[in-house]
Image 1 (cartoon, rainbow, N blue to C red):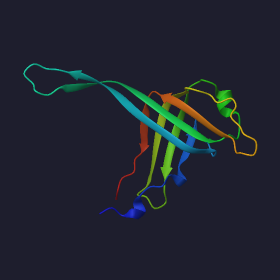
Image 2 (image 1 turned 135 degrees about the vertical axis):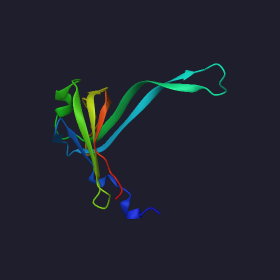
Image 3 (image 1 turned 90 degrees about the horizontal axis):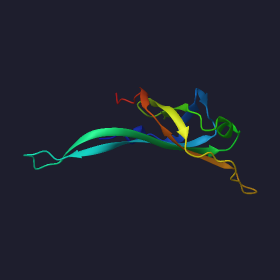
Image 4 (image 1 turned 45 degrees about the vertical axis):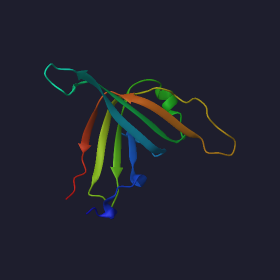
Length: 135
């Protein structure tokens, strides 16, 4: 049976861009999709599949504090996602490699409201640096 205290909350998540902690980021999402090639083979009742290319996409968002994303432009950078919860079995760090923004937000503000910044991006690989393993 699962110990409910081991469920991980994103409260202690951190994002690092090129090694610098982005304290303003409060949401990070990244996923990898694969292109599957369907193969129909003679003598088989089932279609089989071959893995093709992979595509990494993600989004990070949070409060606008500096002009770092505007200044960085469309150049490539690495992101390390650190997911940590004091009650979990440990923490997980994943490095997203060669991230490149799809869109850079230049202006998006409303008087009296916090300015939020969202950056969708693609990436070209990842490394699981620290896995969470149940003890």
